Amino acid sequence: STEGALIEQRFLESGCGISALAVKKGDVQVRSYPSSFGGNYANSGYEFILGMDLVGNAPKIAEEAVKLLNAKKCPEKVTTIILESSQLALQIHESIGHPVELDRVLGTEASYAGTSFVTTEKLDKFRYGSDLVNVYADATVEGGLGTFGFDDEGVPGQRIPIIKGGIFSGYLSSRETAPIIGRKSSSAMRADGWDRIPLIRMTNINLEPGEWKLENLIADTDDGLFLATNKSWSIDDKRLNFQFGTEAAYRIKKGKLGELYKNAVYTGITPEFWASCDAICSEEYWKLWGVPNCGKGQPGQTAHVGHGTAPARFRNVRVGI
Image 1 (spheres, helix red, strand yellow):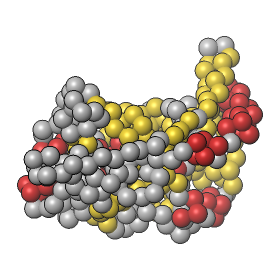
Image 2: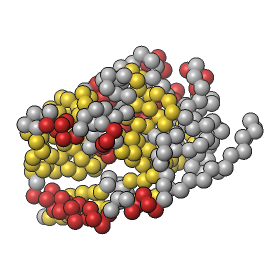
Image 3: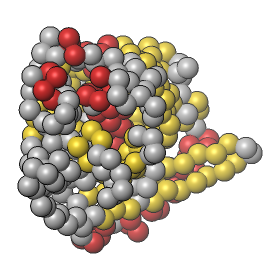
Image 4: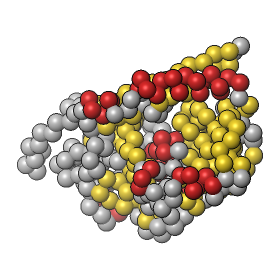
């Protein structure tokens, strides 16, 4: 760069997944492992793929897809939900990661997926979630798909707070945008090729783990749903109102997992949803998910980003359209 940076970085990325498709009389159901839309990805070698044991998990995934054909449709109601970690990763991606990209907030990036409700006067003041919600952007976490040494402005990768104790605390920013809010760049400027202009992109946007064991969290839930594996998503151009669908839903009754449901959909308003989070599983259940297809810009660019999550519980969520 004109500043004097001359940096070469090499990345080794691996990832894969499997899906089983079941069809019966016009009904189409799918189950995926370890996640949908291609599986999971990391800055790692072939050992990452071997560690997934795709062959060993294939029969279970196929069986679950067939079971969904005969399952009841998920009931429509306001209830407690527990999101498994891959679904929670996409929830973070769409309702936290994109809204805190400072170019969206300032209106210089709006043509692809809109702007943001997280305007600059909210910094260090706005309640984004409950006291349990702590989210960091971390470009240094080992194996993360959004991990790097330097961004494309030559700023070293770093870990910055996005939400601390439920309060909005930081943006993803660049050298150009950070001074507008009185901060330094958060090392978020990346391009997907030499012939593209760097844009503010997510790194690894991670939800800090809590203290719950998953079995205890389920046992502590008298009535609700356990929602697993993303099937669909939709969010407005301010990143405020959202709808997500999952491949599978399991009824929770008196602290135990029960009946399997299909075609589950839940909706919400971003800060209200995160404010309803009252439990997060411990580090034992925390997992880093790689997203190799995050789109932004016009002409479009694709970024590789990550999200670390553990299953979490949310109260009073509307399930159904």
